[in-house]
Length: 290
Image 1 (cartoon, rainbow, N blue to C red):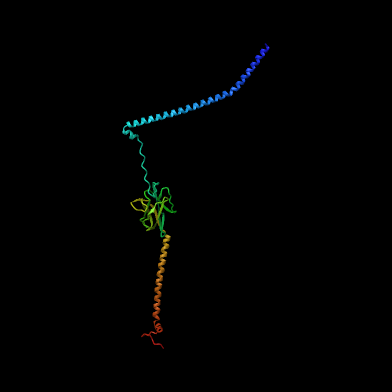
Image 2 (cartoon, one colour):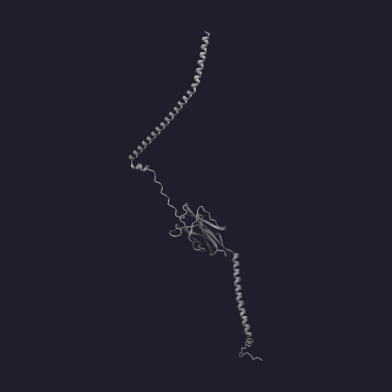
């Protein structure tokens, strides 16, 4: 009995060992089988997702095509007035190209008039300057000048300037054809006062669309400024004294010239007999030589 029991226990232990060995051997195979099944399942899911996406895109395309067809059918049936109102507005017309040399980016020009605020007589002539240029440019003038400014439309490429100064002799009477530069253009005039006082000076500007001041002009008036003409008393008195001295000296020279001529004539008259004798001229009144 004991031997049978021992033999049964040994057989049981052997069976357990064989079961454990079979379990160890079967585990990698089961794991590989599970991995392969997982890969197959993943591939199937991916294929199902791609098929679902393709079906969704096909459904969307079909829905869009159906909507377009319905919209086209509705437009064919809609009245003309609705089609006109639903049409997009026409594009704005293109802006005209600016003329060559024109300051098309500007809306206005600045016309600046500057002149000597005070002119003395007697003394050097005064100066009048007229500057025309874009509103963004800044003119520069000398210290002691009165300045006035007007804004005029930028409707020309060239300009002629005529000064307005009735109480002065102006030179020149009119400027040449001046091209309006992007930095500004300036012309100068000489002012010779006719008398003392406070006078207004200004300028008239004629704008031209051409490049040589031909064609129709667009007249504009620049600013008017006040110029004071004063008499320099000291210089005036000095000038008068110099004039009197010069006239006196000229009169003295003329008098001295005549006086010398008179004295020379008297001397000749008094010495006429002796001179006649020296020259060998005998007259009735000349006494004979002894």
